[in-house]
Image (cartoon, rainbow, N blue to C red; front, side, top):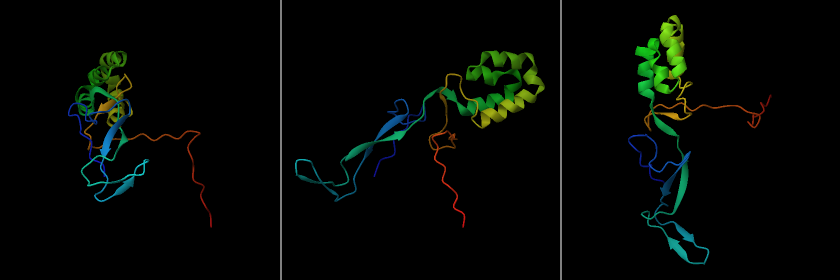
Length: 151
C-alpha cells in the first residue's frame, strides 16, 4: 500500500517532485514476510516503509489554469491572456486588432480552455491535484497498434 503523496499547496504537485517524478513511500500489508539477501526473514507490521516507488508529476512554474481561462474569457480581446502566458508579441497583436475582431479571442479561449496553448516557458498549468486535468496522448512510429481480429 502506498500513501497518498503530500501535495504542495502552491504548485498542486507532490512536495518532492523533481523533473517529472516524485518518490512515495510504500508500506507492505501487515504480516507479510520477506527473506533478505543474507537469509534472515523480516515480518512487516504494516507500519514500516518497505520500499519507495516513483509516481509521475508535472513541471509547473506559476501559471494558473483558472487565471488563464478567466483572462481569456473576460480580457482576451485585449490580449491579456497571451501577455499572462508569456507571449507578448501575440498579446500586442490581439490588443491592436481588438482580438482579431473577436474571432481570435474565441479561438484563443477554446485553445486555452482545452489546454492546447500553455505557458511560453514550456511548463504546465497549475491545476488542482485531484481536479480535472487533461493528458495529451500522442501517436508516434513507436506506438503499438493492436491488430483488429476479424472473424
